[in-house]
Image 1 (cartoon, rainbow, N blue to C red):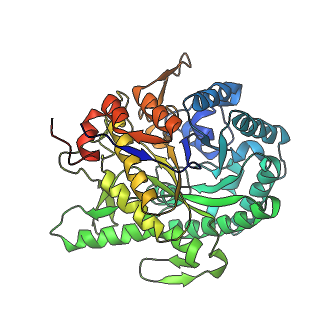
Image 2: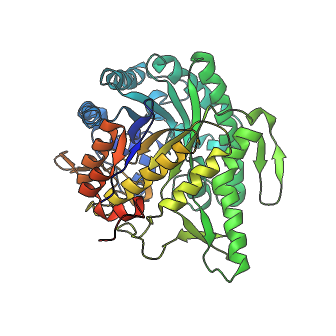
Image 3: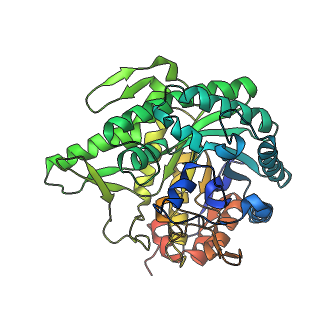
Length: 439
């Protein structure tokens, strides 16, 4: 077998992803908990008991397996439970988490909005409320003032286009929207909220690096002979992949047929986040474009058939992101796989694409695997298992999956070699070394 090493820069960040609502449990004052109580989604319950302190052991696990960063989020509804009250004890709780990360040699990477917001905010009109940018910026400023001593990397929104689409358009996330027009209004409100928060964070913490985790989904026509499906792919891509990046780099708000200038939104990114899972297809219908799973021939898909193993599509996403000429972080990349049968190959071949991007000078500075341990997966409840560690919700036991060992080898050594791949993901060898003998 030909031997090869794929080495990364010394400053490269290796981490995993967590978020507050997915792991904390018993958060009764945000929109998702109310959604669950209404029977529209499975209950989070105790989740992974991060609010009760189990974050300490999971931070230790992260550091022990060679990672040097951890992406986490704060829960707005804990920090500001009512419009006129701020909870300093909640801020101290998150400060303790960030401090613990630093003490374990981890770089804290903080997200302000990861799909949840206070009930009072939603009842005030949510992202369609003209005051939403001011409200979010004040929350950002309070959080930055409390955690600036520990947090260098700030993410205002996690996958904003996905959140708007799922909530205001598809109706499977909690939101009061009823279609594309409400979605467009909410998206503009969220875009202005990011710009306001960007300025607020920099006022409190001038050295902060602030960006957004953009979900990037390559789209193609579901039925290739149908030009209407190609049209649908183009329209959906304009919304899902381009709306927020265009707003925050060029100061333009995209609509289906035109764009509108919004110069105050331009140049409000210090880095560009890429969250990628899988390519997808688009199908034209008279009501609205639909999107679904793309299943490349001969490539595996996740156990629920929702994520395709398509690392070359990931490479194309990174190339596209490099056009914005900003430092890039892979803010999420992973596959749901309770048996851990697909994940080792997915992990090895997607990290190989990151290495290719680094060596082509595309500015990738870090990679965050989704996720650290099994968590609450929003409208999918607890069925999807993305974790490097499995979570038993009854006993709260954490069980390391084999892919966690693969990732640990890569993180500890700051490189991936063919010997490690042969041990944990041998089916990837011919893809990483196309000239090696077929076995």
